[in-house]
Amino acid sequence: MKQMFIKEIIQQLENNQQVFKSLLMSKDEVAYLWRPDPKKWNLLEIVCHLLDEERDDFKTRVAHALNTPEEPLVPIDPEGWVEKRAYSTKNYDHMLFAFLEERKQSVVWLKSLADAKWDNELKHPELGNMSAKLFLTNWLAHDYLHIRQILRYNYHYLKQKTNLDLGYAGDW
Image (cartoon, rainbow, N blue to C red):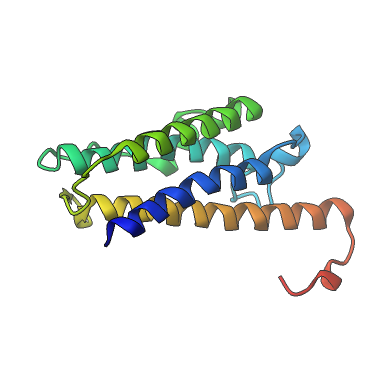
């Protein structure tokens, strides 16, 4: 992967900060605690997850692959964090602000990496060899997955709240 594409990924991570802000700001408690399905996450849980992934997964693992690829990975449990870190007890606005600030810091850090060894690989115990560029690219893909999730959430919340036919808008 060329250095230019790395810069594009970093730029898109920066751009997505505004996307997340636009999609998630100004939600009342009813909106951010609503669940489209009992087994699905609400917006509070999604925001907490985004913060934890930003801080404890992607940034940490990119740094690990770049700086200490020979050392074993520290296991993480993103699904388990929902309960272990008591997402449901958190303040939505505080967590959203914390995520947006963490993203800002991540972008500053990523842009500061001069001559980074993006091809450095570490050994994941289950997934095999994984490079710093793979973690970086998956960081962006993770953004896209959650942007799609939040858009779907917002659509279904609108439909449920208004109880109106949204077919005129087009096929979802």
